[in-house]
Length: 369
Length: 232
Image (cartoon, rainbow over the protein chains, first blue to last red):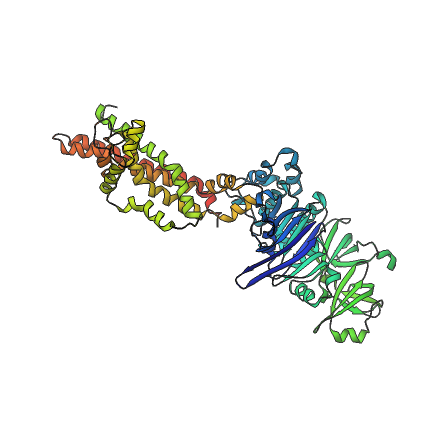
């Protein structure tokens, strides 16, 4: 568990945080300049808070009162930087081994072979960082940090420098790292999509202050949290299993992976754009709250492919839009106009149909090998 | 072997020895000072910077004179060396090394300082986060990144030593077989009747050595240039 109390002023910027993080993977969401990177650098020891206390699993890393400031190299925390920061004078293999070599063999948690396999780096081992693509470089950076056997992996916008397509290629690797290594992670991003694809436990920062911390759907009621999440692209992430392809119809049928779906009457089947992955595979898809419509009953004679039955869990009012959380087997955030909410007579507990076009589903890279 | 006389070979060997010793002598202090100037702030830094660079702008003869006053047998430090250890430095070949090392030191420091300033501190931060302490970070990240600059500095110091005249003749003298390096020998042959041919031969040797040093430094910096472009 990470306990963090810190204050720091730099010019006009004032950072003041006080939080406890105990989830295996926590995302830190905030606009650029909200203090996310500074926060990570304080945990890593690259920046010292003016006052405060940072402790990991009861080991004090920093305490201004007691005059404790463990230097970064003794903190055993892995930091993956936005710009990769691979050593240009070393090969990929040497970069990977850099932190590992500094550890006594008994303290090495991963074998290089396992990490190289996990991140699919065999083919680039003998290259120099200058020869790598942005995506490859970030995978090497993640591998290098993991091989140093950190107690906590800090990721500072590791995908920010990559385009959408490359991000989609890396995300499955990060999920794989999360599932295979069980490494606790703190993932900073200004893009909610990346974070929500990894975890629903977030800390929301606004102008150097924590405005919310916890499961997204629990803290979304706070208007400041909702504003930040919408600014940073609040999305629904659907874990899906591929059922079948209908190439003539241009559709792929997928089943929602959910624990509660059966209660609501059978598995939830949705249609998405055609996909060239084998049936049986698993995939994450993104669905924007504004791409979903609500209806009081099942519609006929419409081209919209997906009509999913659910139940209203909660309604959140904001000055311009209403956010409706619908349980369809997992909680789905739907954005509608206050007028629409009124017309439908939305209230918690009411059965409702969620409508979205197949093209509204955006795949996020396969999560299985 | 026949185209240089035995006496000229002695000159060449002495010059090479002095130049190699000079490069070796400036290596560690040059790296240390270059790092201090590139990465630290301390009161009086600009004064230190000025003193280090003084030999570049002062007349070499003045530098030689100051060295003599400092390290000569009756000099401030030279007297101590003589009374405690029986060491006389002035007018010996180590004096030629000291004279050219003082002249070449600013060149070394400049090259190292620029190279270290260009080595990205962010990479050092990355090394720290991977568990490397400050010294290991310096040895495994900063120093290798600055390697082209260090090589350039060493070659410059080596070449400066090969060509050094003023400070050497004042502090070390012009003693055949002891302190008569290439430029001093060229000058001496020019002054003696019938020495023109020998002077010309040594001029050619000097040019070859200087060009050789330049080529070696070019080749070495090109070898490391391939990763330099990645450090943006």
